Length: 530
Image 1 (cartoon, rainbow, N blue to C red):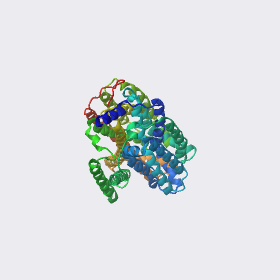
Image 2 (cartoon, one colour; image 1 turned 90 degrees about the vertical axis):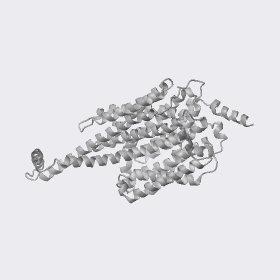
Image 3 (tube, helix red, strand yellow; image 1 turned 135 degrees about the vertical axis):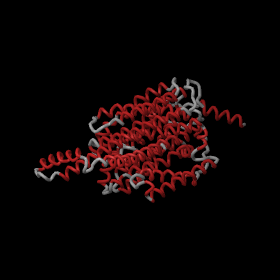
Image 4 (cartoon, helix red, strand yellow; image 1 turned 60 degrees about the vertical axis):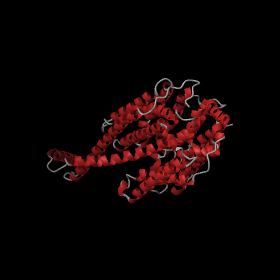
């Protein structure tokens, strides 16, 4: 009997195919993925407007972003367990409904507490969308076409954060910040209808037994991810470990992480299968996904910040100037999705990190006289690197796993993608502030009363400003203020250059990790990866 059951399970895992065309399934699951990932960045450019309409400070408005990320991160690792417990298709439809309904309520919010509560619900609904969609895609396509499936999924995951600020800026400027949430409603309804018509649960999901909910594991997971997100989001603002609040958050995050790992390794049926990290390719692939997110999110944050803070671009103009990031990603996803069938994925990943390092080094040559075209080609390169990295790393990381393990694996990988983005943003913000202070101190050492060139320049600036104001002899103080403003500007420019150079070094260092991946033969039709 046991041998018959094993044979049946083997058939279920290897021979099952969906009854609907996989391409229709792909379109159906990409819709909610794109919608959810879009919402991680679409509100970035609207925070000033939200703060003003809600009579809140900008710092308080940033919790609109943080509340979403925290609840989103907590749900991600639970996706496989929840999908098996409630049936994956039913759970996916519920998540889309919750995300769509809470998006509508976000737009209708009358005060900040209501908006934050709705953003938490939105994050809970959206957390499972990306990993479930990725798992469905990988199960629906035969091994030879899984590279193409990953390319389609990648379009939603990596292009959406780039489109978000541009779309958010246009909706906010043209209509109202509320429309950045209303736009989700028709997309969500369309996605629910499409998934109802196309998606079905595979046998190992229909007959799975995930076991009871591990309350202690869930509590530890929530404590870890919630406190970690608060720590990363507020660390630079509160001077990191100089703040007792940040120290407390860091301690609780570490404690939650330790308890969570201990609990999941001891459980017979864990919520998150940490034993998958014993598979080398999955462990290395997950770390590479983390590093890729650190790099991509950092470049995606630094470039518009530079354009806005130092060159005076509006939020919408900066979003448009950096939109080639999405164009490069879209093109490379298509190319790599086909090429991965014949080329060793490790070579493609190495190329991706080299291209990403080249983009960062090119951006490290910026100055205050550049135009939009100076950042155009580095954005194209950075976007192209997404495709070179995202597809082969996901394929190599999940290739040794059984099909019934894919759901847990994709949930963990998407969690590390989110955590990598948070770490990247926190690290970049901290480095910019610290390097700017250091450069300001260094440059300030040359602004002394004994510097004859400086004194001459100050007289010239003072005379010009006094003449412009029609008050001769009263231009000394404005000249000093102008000189100090130039010093701050130059210090900020040097800090941007430093951080771009650091990112290039991280990208090159990641190549060493790619060498740890085991080679997986490019899949052929009729040959299983599992």
